[in-house]
Image 1 (cartoon, rainbow, N blue to C red):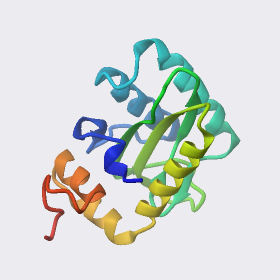
Image 2: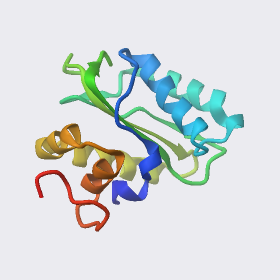
Image 3: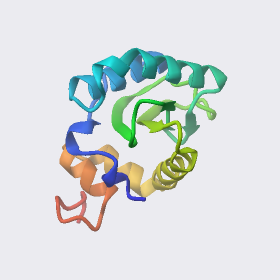
Image 4: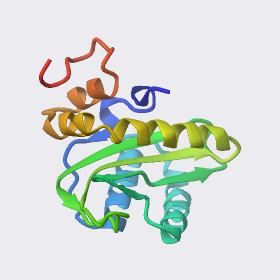
Length: 160
C-alpha cells in the first residue's frame, strides 16, 4: 500500500498550529471536513471515535510520529490527513518526545484488515529516519506527497 494513494496534496497540513494532543487531532479533522474529504454529518462521530481510541493509549508511537485512527460505519474508503509540526506537539507519545508528524486516518469499520494494512504502511514509512528528515525539510505539500511516493513523477524529493 502506498501512502500517496491515501492522500492528495490538499490532505497535507505542512504547518500545524496546535501544540497539544487533542487540539492537534481536532485541527486535522477540521481540515478534512473543511477541504471536503469528510462529510460534515460525520464530524462529531469521527471526533468521538478518535477520542475513545486516544483515551485507551496515545497513538504517539515514538520518533516524533503519531498515528491517530478510528473506525466508522459511514465511510467506504480510508480517509486520511497528514499534519507536520515543526515546533512539535505534546502528544503524550510513548517515548515522551514531541510529535512532528501526525498521520490521522478513518477506516470503514467492516474492513479491519484494511485498518491493519494502513497502520502498518504508515508505521513502516515513518520509522525510516531519512524519510522523516526529508518530510521535515520539504517546502510544500507537493514535495511531501512526492516523498511519500518516491517513484512518482510529481516533484522530486528534496536532495534529488
